[in-house]
Length: 92
Image 1 (cartoon, helix red, strand yellow):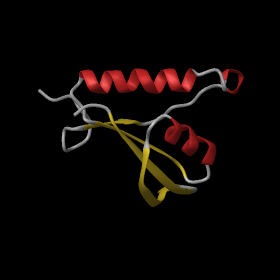
Image 2 (cartoon, rainbow, N blue to C red):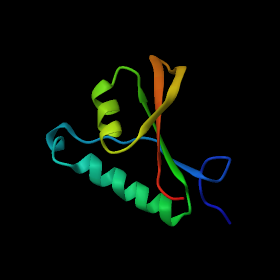
Image 3 (cartoon, one colour):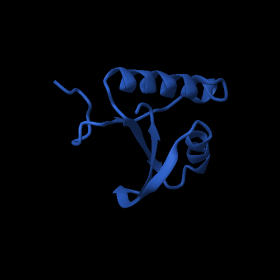
């Protein structure tokens, strides 16, 4: 049975990721994302998907820095604006 969460059975999503302000810039987010990628790979996912608010440009840069590619923008995804989606291939 496939436990991967996206309908096509090949992608997993990091739905919410936050780091307390007192612990930012210490590599915590990167460790969490890498752990999620390892889990996704173990579950036979091919890609990991993540979305962020369009205004969170520093978060966009973070994901791009660790290998995520911008997929696109979904307008009015949040009550207060658009979402930017990113993806990263984690296995072949």
